[in-house]
Amino acid sequence: MSSLVTEAIVLHAFDYLETSRILRLMTREAGVQSVIARGARSSRKRFGTSIDLFAQGTVEIHIRPNRELQSMASFETTRARPQFALDVGRFTAGSMIAELALRASSDESAQGMFDSVERALDNLVMADADHTVSAGLAGAWHMIAALGFTPSLDSCANCHADLDPAAEAAFSHPAGGALCARCARLASGTRSLPASARNALREWMSGNAAMRLTSPESRAHQRLLREFFLEHLGDHRELKAYGVWEQGAWTAA
Ligand SMILES: [Zn+2]
Picture 1 (cartoon, helix red, strand yellow):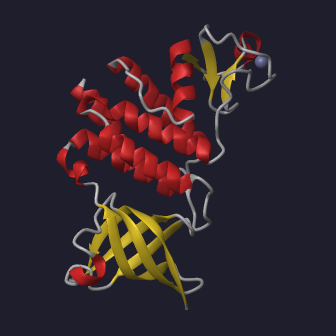
Picture 2 (cartoon, rainbow, N blue to C red):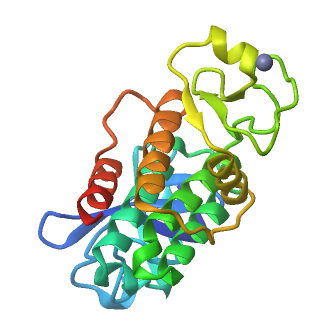
């Protein structure tokens, strides 16, 4: 058994038996780890007052090789992020980020993924209540870029011809990006992407979260992100938190 001390963010948490909690953590050094915090609901001394969803801190994990569930020795919270509990749009966007991060990660540490999740959650905490959808979109696309799945936006994903940055372009999920007019004619199932939408994707993937979207633009972006994620990073399981986030933006509009 070895001991791992690293920074961690709680991406999933539920009570287990009478006194314990099971958590899925995004760690800086060891990717996603599932841990059991024995006595977490009675021992505030070892685990702090809040090892709740979206909390960040320093965790100590006792690692046994070839185990699915590791044992958490302590968690010292540095940021509890209580703002997520106060606004349903912020909470559903944060849950979506956690779901995508868990789906796309393993126990191998993905370079940049911890930083990207941290940035996405911090941007959601700071976003105005009516801009949590675009902050969520920004965070998700930044994670996709951190994972190395950046779609081609400035040249054709098929033949690499330069694309006019001011023009509408067809977007193909299987091809992994925008297509020139010639390749678009031969492709099926493409989405039409206005120049402003391509620009938003570019900004989000480079880490800029500030983007004002109309409700139809938000919905189109949510659909595009869902389709892209399922095409390249999905595992055929339904994205439940994503569905709640997407549905929430529909009903609020
Ligand atoms: Zn082409």
